[in-house]
Amino acid sequence: MTTTATAARGEARREARARAGDRIFKGTSTAAGILILLILAAVAIFLLIQAIPALRAPAEEVMGGEGLLGYIAPLLFGTILSSVIALVIATPLAVGIALFISHYAPRRMAQGLGYAVDLLAAVPSIVYGLWGFTWLAPRLTPLYRWLSDNLGFIPLFAGPASPTGRTMFTAGVVLAVMILPIVTALSREVFLQTPRLHEEAALALGATRWETIRYAVIPYGRSGVVSAAMLGLGRALGETMAVAIVLSATGAVTFNLIGSTNPSTIPANIALTFPEATGLDVSVLIASGLVLFVITFGVNMLARWVVNRRAEFSGAN
Picture (cartoon, rainbow, N blue to C red):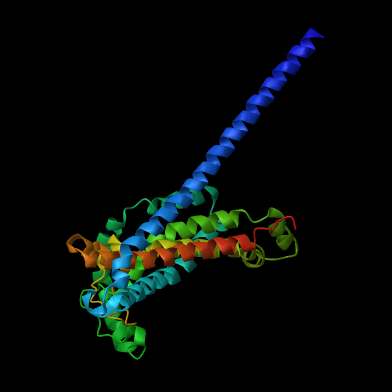
């Protein structure tokens, strides 16, 4: 009887400690979540307050003399254009690499490729910029001349081709390499979560490996791929040093991707202009940063919405 009572008391103490640990963990997690929201709100409020002088300033006092909208619009255009180029290049390549790693490559090769792709994310952005400036840009120059000579009737390749290769297309390629590990890693994890039952059912019905991927794996991971692409887009939108090094910006608004006249981007413009800015110019740059903050926040919210749309989907259904 005494032994039973002692065991019961020991079990009660263990349960009490477990409940205390659960409460501590729940409180810590809740505090961390609230802290993130507070930091995000603090950043938004800071940017808004610092941008108020630029919002109220007369158009002729803003840099460029065309008002705040006239100053930010070309930068926003360049930011979106370079990011879209990067997304168009990187997403199909990332999905192909993810499918190869998850469903085609032998296990040892898949592990090695996975590590190699993940290591790309650890390379500093300035290294990518130097690579794009010294190696990639000169080697793309012959391609730009060919595009200008043979496809110049398309506005994207109207030319004249840049002799240095420091064009919007080069910046987009560098950004594509930078976001490649993000999109690849997330897509690979999504594809690996495809219910084995779905793949086996497709194979049992006589589907080839590609048909199994087409009808079972890709539909299951479509929302994950979209969210991965959106997160990569968010990275591309905020990239600074690589674009600042590679892109020969003039501030013009043009869809010509291979010419010497290129729009700048908001992050690159802030990085290059902020050290010498004073007074109202600082507020103007912060206002452009606020625009970038809102766009990036919206892109990430869109990615989260896409994921939540299929949150109720289960592989057992």
